[in-house]
Image (tube, rainbow, N blue to C red):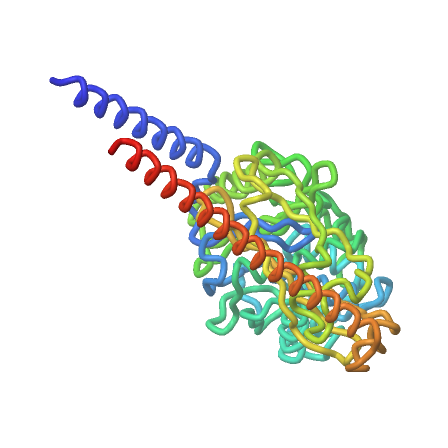
Length: 434
C-alpha cells in the first residue's frame, strides 16, 4: 500500500469517527419514546422543544378534565352548590371512575373540582357541566369554543369527562396549549397536585368520602420532582395519556404524552421529556435591530428616520450543542393598523436541520409606532431633510466618480510615459550598438 493510500485510509477513518461521535452525541440526549404522540413545551414562550406526532388526532380520556376544571374556575363560584341530576349519575358506564354521587346529591363546586382532579370522578364532571351550562351537550360546546380560543384548534369535546366518543378528540400540541394557560391559575395548580381530599357527609351520603390521587407522577416510584400540575387518563380506546407541568428554577415545562399501552412506559416517556428539557437547554435572548425594522416598515422612510421603540427582549431555549448563530430570524409586516402603526411578525427557525431539538422556535408579534415628527416628514415628499440627504448622497457619488476617473487617467498617463521611456532607451542602445 502506497503512502497516498495510507493517508486516505487515515483521513477516511477520522471522518467516520467524527460522524459517529456526532451521531452518538445526538442520540444520547434525544428522548426515545414508545408513546405514539408527545410534545414538550416551554410554558413561558410556547416554544416547542420536542415533538412526535404532536398534531395527530388522539382520544384524550380523563385529561379532558383539565379543560373542564379550567372553565369551572373561570365561570363558577367555588362555594356554589351543585345538585346531581339523574342524567349526570346514570349516563355513565358502570366501570368508569366515580365517587358514587347519587341523584339529588348536593356538593359544592370546590368539592366537585377536587373530586374531578384527585379521584378523576366522571359523575363530578357531569355535575360541573350541568351547573355551568344546564346540560352536558351545551357544556361540551363551550369547552370546545374555549379550547380553540386558547389555540387548541384541532380539539373537539363532546363531554366533560373524556369517556370514549368518536367525535371527542384532541392533539398533544392542543393539550399543551390548554395546560400552558391553565397553570397560570394558582388554584388550578393546587387542585391538580392534591394527593388526598375529603368530602364530608352530604344530604345523600352519611359517611365522609376519602379521595386518593392515583397519578403516578405525584407519588410512588414514578414521582417527578417539581410537578406543579398533572392529570392522567386511560380508556381502552385512548390507552394511557398524561399531561404534566413541572418547574425547576425559573424554567416551567409542559409535557404531553398520548396513546401508550403501558403505564410504566408512559411514565418513562414523560420523565424523559422533562429531563431532556431541564438538562439539555440554555436560555438565549436577543433584540431587534433598527436595520431589521427599517427593511420592512415603513417603506417610505429611509433607515434612520424613525426612533426604535422599546422592544421586549426575545427569549428562547436552545440546545447546549447549538449556538445563537444557528437561529434564523425573519421579520415581516403582518398587518398595518394605520399609517403610523404596524404589527410585525418575527419568526425564528434553526438555520440547519437538527435532531437535537424542534426546528421551529416560534414567532413573536411586535407593534411598531412611528414618532409623530417622523410620520410628518414622511408625509411631505419634498421636505428639506429628505432633499438634503438625497443631494448629499448624490454629491458624494459624483465626487467619487470624478476621483476614480481622474485616477484612471493618471494611471494610464503614467503607463504611457513608462512605455515611451522604455522605447527611447531601446532605440538608444540599438543605435550605439551599430
